[in-house]
Length: 394
Image (cartoon, rainbow, N blue to C red; front, side, top):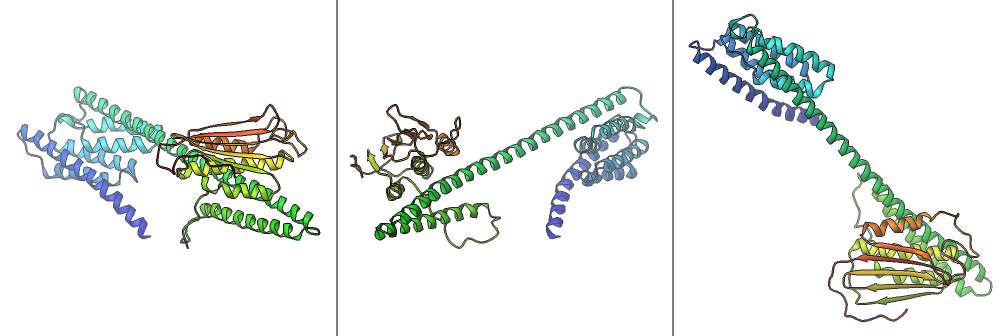
């Protein structure tokens, strides 16, 4: 209730400024007009001018009724004072409010009534048929046209606002979908392979089974943490945060991805070239997700293959390349189940979108000698880093 009252007070205050300004302008104009004619403005006419201006306080909530009151008071002024033909500010504002807030049919009726009623009694005649009437008609048409233009502009602005809001929601949904896909595809695939390896080695190699189960537990815990972080974004936000969110992974976390790939049974080589330096968080996250998705696809589709991950730092960009030597392409021409023909998969689409958002390029294609290669090139502003050199394969 207090909020509603505050909003009403705010609107009333704004409308009061318009009302007082219109009353002051019209009163000043009529005062000068009657003084030039040698007859002072009578009290009744002055009161009607002020009342017509103050009636504009209700123009937003009741535009048609406000216009009716203003026109009636205008007729009173015209009949009780000797004024020249005019179109006051109060009827102009009232008619404009109707043109902005009501349908075209209502605006047309309002315009047809405004022009003759505003001319009634002007120039000392019951109805001025000359220049004054034509001026009132022209002023009425100008005010209505202005209202229509403003209303159309307001509709365009509102439509653009809704469009931008919908686009922002769609972009956020795509981002969350990519994150969920990366989390589920990578961690669930790793957990599946670890569970299979533990079951196969449980009888004759308990130590290997134990390591697989430890990796399985860690991957599951990490998947839950990342999904919880995403779900926190989707919550209403009415609960206070109990602690800072976990940092997003970056290029520095590639060792963990490569280690998980090796523990999952795929020989994976990791090489870093160039002077290692900090990357912007969004670029580092993109590098991490590209490697994560590419290695996940290799494990799913390349069969018994070896993978190579190469991260290269340059002065103005960073490139990451993931390739394998599987018997078929990453799209599934191997012993492992293939993707449906003609479809690139949501993982590859997500990688392309991620890289494109950073202004980079992504190449993903089968190799002539067999296997599959994914390479991303991401621009990075020149900055400081570790001493130059090349890190040996790990």
